[in-house]
Image (cartoon, rainbow over the protein chains, first blue to last red):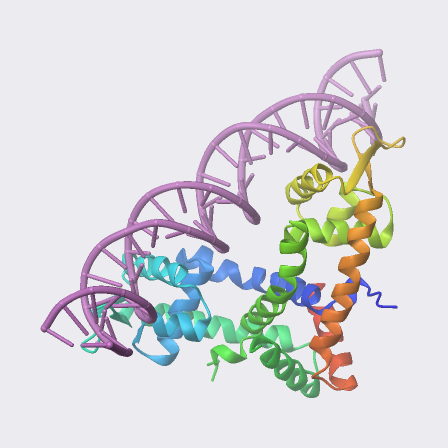
Length: 141
Length: 141
DNA sequence: CGATATTGGTTGTTTTTGTAACTAACAACA
DNA sequence: TGTTGTTAGTTACAAAAACAACCAATATCG
């Protein structure tokens, strides 16, 4: 019959694992830089892929436009990014990290790398490969 | 060096995968039974492990007591569970699914099994095993 | 061209969550 | 026993998220 143990239900497991792991890293961007999760995601995208418009961030980070809009406003208030008019489309602003935004990005990035390494320490190379592959595919549904 | 691609940061991947996969199942319990995620989790625990006290659910499901308290109130309002005084401890109520609560539990459980099977279809037995193992370990930090 | 629909983005309102303070029952120990 | 400390659970208040309505710029197409 179609019965399933809660502990074997993949979305549940994913939610638990996501919650647990992100909790640890949250303290870094929250406590140290007063950022919210969405802000950190937006910052990450800008740091990683260079100047982007809000729309592009929405698409790439799969975030709703209101979330991005508010995160951008918050990051702007913290002087972590600046807007400049998009010559292609006057509705959009091109968003770009300031020097201090980049500094924070680099710091967080390094911290993230350390954090991830510590997490993955408990898995073999093979397990890591498969885990990443599975997650990537699941995230892209 | 310590640089990391966003797509390789495990907590991020987990969050994306969790979001994507749970979105699909959410429609089942939300649209069809007017339930919230926490309510469905509580219902699941009661259905799976029988009558429990709120405290036990908190511990097992790793949910904060306020969340459970509200979920229980909501499930009670929907007549999916009843409370009865715990003879062992008059502070707690023992929570138990009603007949209709059990019916919903069974329906959702079956739906979950189907959903999970469809998700896992794209992975080999080996991948599934490793994925589950990794997630379980990560969830338990 | 001009009317209409669509898109990027913001703002306002309602839900949901998180945090803290509180009540009642129990436990521990002088 | 009674004083103090914990624990189970609720409630009130603050923060954050989801949802909907909105404005201005741009496509689309007669």
